[in-house]
Image (cartoon, rainbow, N blue to C red):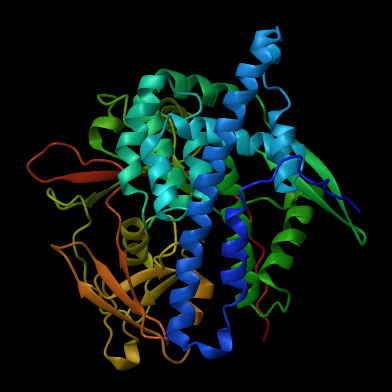
Length: 447
């Protein structure tokens, strides 16, 4: 449909050599382990290529600015078409071209993030996350964020990068973060988009706590109905329930839905107004937003202490004789492991309290013996050739070694608490649970 005209100059085509080399790879001649190693090497090469493209894009922008300024183009119009030029070279839309240009220009001022991309520690998407979360900071604050986060990026998944960058940005510019949060709340809306085949998508932009309550209630409702024998999938039940709740709001009644905030005692009492609290299931929020949530809670506000090691800022151990992770042990497990699955680079929320070593093989139902996994990773763990084992426990950082069928080993370490504990003799963080109005659940058991 589209054709690219011949270049007016003879270009230095470094890519041809790489294209040829990559085309010569014959997977059938490689062992399983070599295939996995090759995949990892290709991913590093992709990241290095993204860094090179960013460098080329920035240089093209510099040259266009210089050339257009020389012929009298007004400052506000300088290099306006560079994004389109980049888009055509990369065979993408003008919008994508402008995003690539913005990333390239931002990375010029973020040497640590750029170096992580060039080394293959992160991919282009994670570099874009860092740039986006630091876009509203001053030059000095952005330099501080880059120097702080850049060396830590290796091994972080998309969600981890997002949370870390957002938390640092909040701490560096508390007033700006509060102002942006206030503006964002004014942009609440619901939209409808046709999908075809008789389907449509409803999207809602909501305050994070409200959205978390809504999705939690739908998930809990789906779990109850599935346990009662409903043969619809979880997603189908959630979609049907959303429509039912909107069509018949009088069904609302007596179920309590809550959100969790993790904060130190100083933050809860208002003595620390700079550290961002952590909304479980979402990430860092501004101190002002957290204060509003607590002040505006319609039902009970429960405060539960969770104790952390004062040196490593990780949770202490807790044992149980149960055979499944339930109640406070499950809460503690997910509080220790954070908002995402413990599998490296997996950004899915943890839905299963999993025995690292299967209980049938002697695994214990304890904090040290468990990990939070998403459904897909928990099922993959049960496939032949996979092995998980705990290699360190409290007082050291909880670590699980994952061995794949090819013998490759990866290590999953429990993150530190999202906030620093209070500075007392016994370090601790506070989990504040906020409960919304009662919502009715009609449960019909199938014989």
